[in-house]
Image (cartoon, rainbow, N blue to C red; front, top):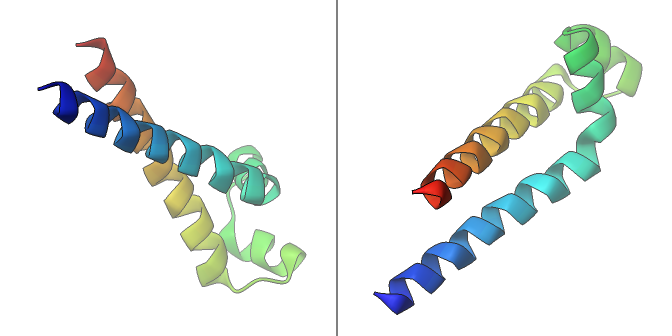
Length: 76
């Protein structure tokens, strides 16, 4: 059991670090979308394809969900 717990902790740490790193790398786009959603407007302003902006926002939301699930699992 002890080995399983350490593997789970490692996986949890990986997802938390990955989510934080992704946010830092894309914080301007994510924060701008939070303030005023609009994929097309943000894509034009940033010189990105709409699909790229969508993927950044979607990945951030999935990362937040993963981290929240990890926090819930660790409290049990």
